[in-house]
Image (cartoon, rainbow, N blue to C red; front, top):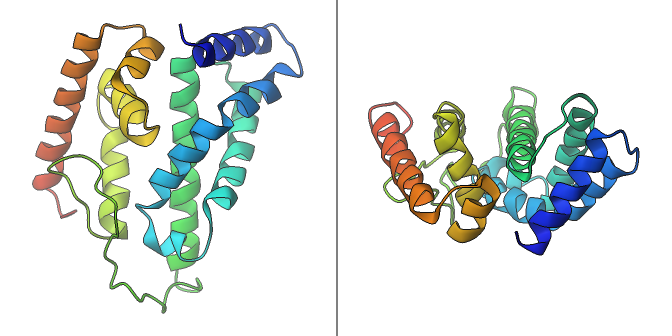
Length: 196
């Protein structure tokens, strides 16, 4: 295991044993990776990005994650990162609804015509507006769990393939097969939808 994964596994173990400080250590230890994940996901929400910054989204998502960790006790880095990605997605979707709702500050201010700038999720799948990106994220959540985990680690969390394979406890070849299957599934589902 890498040092990051070993430490995270250790803190998760202590948290499950009731160590009150361990939950904070888990979140603190993963904070920089979660900041990278949040920044990348935020690019898919230009109407949110216009009104808020990465650290604001991260802070609220970490509050959600901290609350979740009081009820859910991940047994591995794999489960932890899945939970974290879910909380960040929920925060972004809530913020998008807030800013673009009928009374939201972004409802009548859209200088980029709803186009996504510098945000291509997966080769062949390129949502162009908020509705498309929301559909994309929901489609990711609908993938089989093994594919969803690979997308979460490789795309959302920007891990290398060897790092993701280690977190998932699978071979690099298996990870590559799941990544290809996930990309094909996303492409097939989104090309036939109204998201494009």
